[in-house]
Image 1: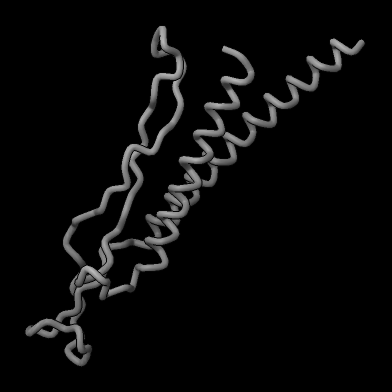
Image 2: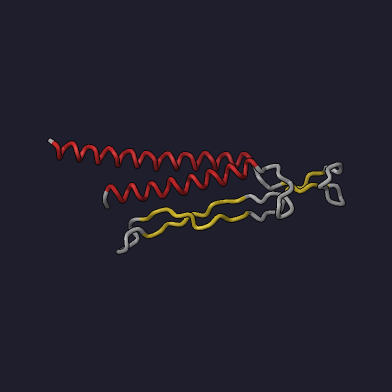
Length: 137
């Protein structure tokens, strides 16, 4: 495994976590969206990652790939609000089943994973610089 392999793996992880942060941000932003183009409340989305073989001779080295962005089809939260024009016949409005606290924890996890991959890239960069300085001497 070379330093450049480490850079490829870490950069793929950073790209995947960046997409995850964007999806989580959209979930938080739409936590109160009761009407979408498709009809009904916003459906929470989540990112599914996949480890891909990076080494063709085995599964020792992996890289991260976004396999899919899935929609959470759990039932919406029903809130009693008969004055709302979107209320059903019983007076309930369907809100997205998004827990902002859970989304924030997921966002912090994605940010820390992104930062860990950035640290790997910094370490690899320092190793390359050290190797070059040894060769110059």
